[in-house]
Image (cartoon, rainbow, N blue to C red; front, top):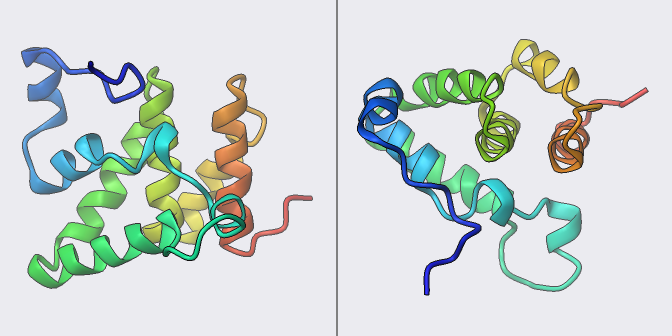
Length: 136
């Protein structure tokens, strides 16, 4: 039985727009991003496994070691995702920017703290908290 919470398959026109880079494939096809992602404070209370954020950072570091241009590419993809109509894409963008975003990138995340979707707003606040940015 297929999990309805997973990222929806995209049609060929959307696939062409998203591109076929390794980074885009990782961003849109990775299982622990989006609604399956758990922030450090939520996750560490009930397990001794590395948090999703730390696991994501490790995966990104491994990707960067294999291809030094992958981090700027991931940042660009994540910033594009913040403007998506798909809530899952916006959430993925926030989560990736928490790991690789610059201070300027996080100003875009800051603007999502009051997003109409409560999960997007929560992710934006959690990202800023994880990066040590005061919310007030």
